[in-house]
Length: 439
Image 1 (tube, rainbow, N blue to C red):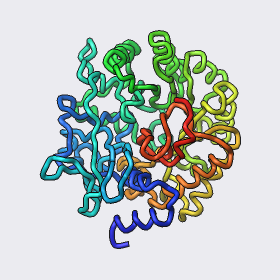
Image 2 (image 1 turned 180 degrees about the vertical axis):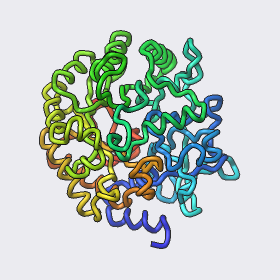
Image 3 (image 1 turned 90 degrees about the vertical axis):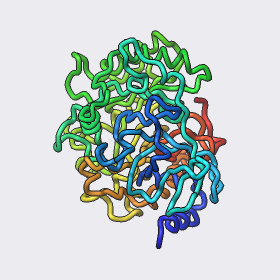
Image 4 (image 1 turned 30 degrees about the vertical axis):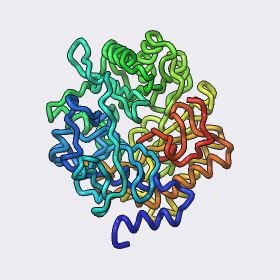
């Protein structure tokens, strides 16, 4: 392949059942995109919703390495449409990479486009600044800092604990930069609250509820780092649960409540349910037993892979299998030094995990791995996993869902190319539109 364009077109031809939009989206997510200064935002003072860095950096460089993109943030997400491939509306989370062959820039008329190998391949839309971002909390904090929205405004992302108690080389997940992301924002003097106060969250949600007159925000996710002991005197279920309880008491039924937490014992999971959480994401990260031990050492030490999986299955008794949606990080299966050497091996392993959960009625979802450079796996694998892996995973994912008669998981909006809003992988873009479930 002489160019990136040739590689992408070859994969679109070889895997015609995977939407062409998903091929481009996965390549942008795995390898990042560069931004011309003409495509950057004016931060919170402009007309474009800027990137909020809602939990991880999702960048291929540290802030000091991003140049002007560190001073004038790029958009939170971009939408691809049209162009020579006639792309349907595709929402893509922004992952900045100044060396990417993909570049967003404005033409002579000021119209944004996505360029690959110097050729314009699609029009680019950017999210407008929402009215609720223009209002401050009573303490002066911005709504974007306390309760940013992603997935084109669909999801309020509440990272209420911005660091993780799995700390250091012997405990941190080897692909995760949550702790570094916290450090780099503090070093840059940016506001980046470590533990968000419940009242701050409620005030931010009140602003969103007041000004989101179109009710574009449909769900919220409560998340943050793992709590291995106590935080503010609370264990993990009670810490994250207290936010859900407060939100549901103040805004009953306004949003679908989700929580991303460790795979916890059944009694703890019951507390989440009692607090009003509707969807539970006990992320299993990577399926292979050896890779889980190597790449998730803290989770292996404190819980262990087999117990983690048992707890996921147990949680279905409380939430119902359909409302248990564990995430995995797609691509780390092929990360050196311990990952699979071939795409065939990696897909076989990941599909085994999909079949394990889907056979029980549990539908995992995935985030496309971004090899952040401050992580051990990012340093060792700056190019991430091959694009072919990501395209074949989409094919295997859809096929496994069909094998077990499952439809798209709740809380993600509509599936299907041109409809999906989930921005950090293409799994929703790759499902048939007719498989839509109620949000």
